[in-house]
Image 1 (cartoon, rainbow, N blue to C red):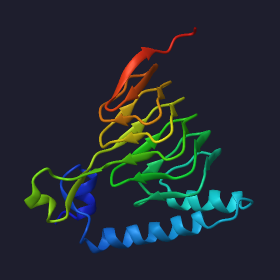
Image 2: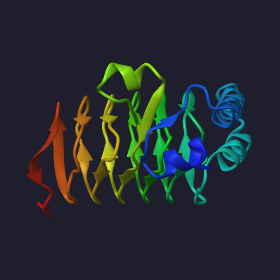
Image 3: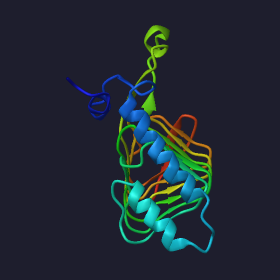
Image 4: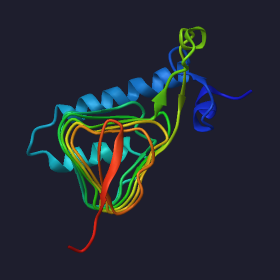
Length: 188
């Protein structure tokens, strides 16, 4: 029999609200987020140790400012020289992958989870999760919302307040709701 966690990994509808395994994993994650968010500013090594325990993959150099929340943690992978400012949320029912040299401004959200449009399925507590991928050398402005299944290419700047509903190609500045490309990034 397929578990709810396996269904989520396949992008199928799964029961996140009532499945004991997923509830236990989220509770464990909440405990680690709580511990992280209550560290002292001077406890940088302790913070890094908690993130390494929480995330699926980290590189050597990273900084995630509290307050930070995620659902599971093990679906998050961050590259080298990663920086995430305060009050960010990652709902990681599916993989969320950040490349190298990614800078995330305050108040951003990365949401792999979605729910059926039809009330009958939605009211059963079913959801789906689609992966999010952020390339290398990306700057994400304040209050950006990245939705399920989105890929943001390398060398992009996503303007503050954007809602990213579709893939963004490499080497562009993109802004808005919905987020759209406004220009290419050139050497000038």
